[in-house]
Amino acid sequence: MDTDNHTDDEIRKILSLKKITVVGMSQNPGKDAHMVPKYLVKNDYDVTPVNPNTDEILGKKCYNLVSEVPGEIDIVNVFRPSEDVLPVVQEAIKKNPKVIWLQQGIHNPEAENLARQAGIDVVFNRCMFAEHRRLSRS
Image (cartoon, helix red, strand yellow):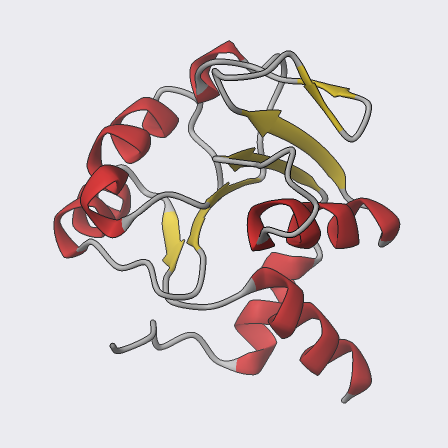
């Protein structure tokens, strides 16, 4: 699977944004959808979970939809299967985030094009945790 064509400097700039909404954030500590947001919280990111199956994760209130998250959103970080991304992006566009970040293994060209048409930058098939660690060392 391809990845986007962002340079390291562009990814660094994206990672400088601090208000992140995580779609598909998990309560299960063994899942990447829990470990990655937990890492982000520990690295001074303001993480808001979107998961309709629970009320709270990591002590933070969960929302059912991205559009329900109060205030501005810098990055919508998506932990959903590629085939489920389009409705997530359609919903996220309502909040006009700066970036939609599709985690490693996630790629949906239709959804990505829709986001770009709305003026939203798209990162795909990259792990936010791995990119943060890699670029903070260099």
